[in-house]
Amino acid sequence: MSRLVIVSNRVAAITEGKPLAGGLAVGVYDALKEKGGIWFGWSGDIVDALPAAPDSRQEGKVTFCTVGLTRRDYDQYYRGFSNATLWPTFHYRDDLSRFERKEYAGYRRVNAWLAETLKPLLQPDDLIWVHDYHLLPFGEACRAAGLRNRIGFFLHIPFPSAQVLMTVPPHQELVKAMCAYDLVGFQTEPDRTAFTDYLVRNAGGQIDADGLVHAHGQTLRTGVYPIGIYPDEILAQAEMQANRRHILNLKQGLQNRKLIMSVDRLDYSKGMLERFRAFERLLEMAPNHQGHVSFIQVAPPSRSDVQNYQTIRRQLETEAGHINGRFSDLAWTPLRYINKRYERHVLMSLFRASQVGFVTPLRDGMNLVAKEYVAAQPPEDPGVLVLSCFAGAAQELQGALIVNPYDIDGMAEALNQALAMPREARQERYQNMMRSLRENNLSQWRDRFLHDLRADAARTPYLLSAATTLP
Ligand code: ADQ
Image (cartoon, rainbow, N blue to C red; front, side, top):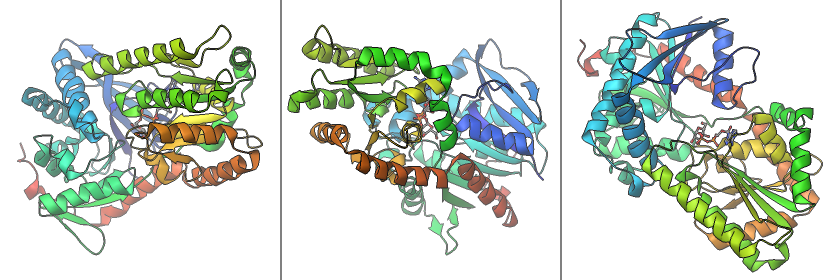
């Protein structure tokens, strides 16, 4: 059986026996543990000079191989092109995107260097699985380095429609580079369609009867693999004894008030500003909730050295101050805005203690918080999920109250409906969603992707003629 090689921008800090961070890290690590293999990527460190070889650490059958990046690489590849160009554009915020040729050159350079650095660690039949937007051209760089392995790519964030993608000046090169993968996976069908539409309409691509895409002289498969969670593990985490103290503190503060709960990385794509305004609108339009409902938004800062992230943080602080100034009284603070990271089990118990999960990104590849919220609920008295139609998760979680995050009144109405929903209706919605979470859990996501990547091995190997010139 071939080894699995995972390549992602960051390598999760995993130590056997210690609790796992959750999400993607768990799913991928499980697969590596079973089959044996390598997890390769950036260590998160800034170094003076690029290392000649990666640092490696063994954990059972898994080898973690990490490299540092220089300040210039970090600024151009990570902070620049990945997070100031691709991230906003792929989340349909081309208004926030900026493009610098220098940064794009750095992005390509780091991808090429990472491919060259991985090459000596590989065996010919290793299966390579590359993750996310930092590494769109990594597959092409591997081909240019002479690698013939099967290489699959999974995009965790949305793939934008052509007109939006075309605001990134090197869009043609980027999409061409993606065609060097054997399999390209997306979270939802609209993402996959946006990619294939671009290829067909803008790159002379063709899709054959088997669904294979022929473009830029390559043949590749595309697929939809919505990432899942392990719902029963989350339920168990939410019920852990270790949460007792936190829940007692929370209940003391709430004094029998209902709780609306939101948890996100502090990111402008998550729609927090609109969410705060919807909560304010709820208090205006249904004053009976004043003094009886609290809203907790947990949002640990991320990418705080990117300008747009500093801006959204300031806006949220202003908005939270405004709402609390307007509605608070001596005994009640309507909105608690917390910039802290919590341990997973604590977070799950907070979900469990709340009556509404308020998850309204303006755009999101999937959104695991929405799934975690549902899985953490007590089956006998579950809370209600209010979910954005622009989260990938909305395709599966039909039992949620689906809202448009640009419609502040609509979100306020949905909160009102959720807070008043009878237990039976809540249970029915919950059971419907739990069924789909169990049917498509994290291991199914991973196994389906790897199955398709392996299955394709029977097909014509990558066409070298179309690759970037071999060294
Ligand atoms: P993210 O944009 O990071 O992921 P999301 O899917 O919601 O978004 O995952 C966030 C994870 O971090 C969740 O597991 C959540 O529990 C955890 N988390 C958030 N805030 C936390 C806090 N304060 N303390 C502790 N943990 C916290 C990207 C894409 C998504 C896609 C995922 C996976 O943007 O669309 O769903 O990858 O593919």
